[in-house]
Length: 174
Image (cartoon, rainbow, N blue to C red):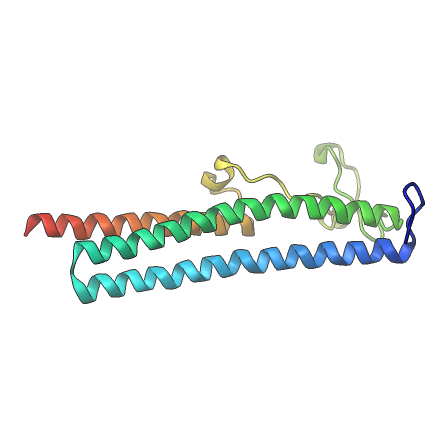
């Protein structure tokens, strides 16, 4: 066991980096699984509405879909923050191992406009994933997995609300 202030071994840094990658992949799998569950619940909402034609049944099923999608959205945001922390950790481990070289694992330039490196080096450069705010989610020019998943959560919420409103409207009309 290492003492405080003692320099870590190369093996311990590699193990820490491996653990960070596994944590990242586990979080990403959970994020996708939440979206899959919401999609199944959304299909169930359609089934409940078509089978029962009842505002209360549709409202309850719709509420379940909305709650699940809202929870999934919050999970996605939490996992993006986790992903950023893990990538900072991974980049620090790579740096400690001396892996950040343009011919191996190039780092993204702090100012991409002033980056004079060859295009292949710039395209292969690694960086910490960007934060995902509301503008990122609403901006169609932002395209990454986290933003896509967040948009899908919001679409499922909108779908749940729409189904409830339409069934309630039909109930009030009759």
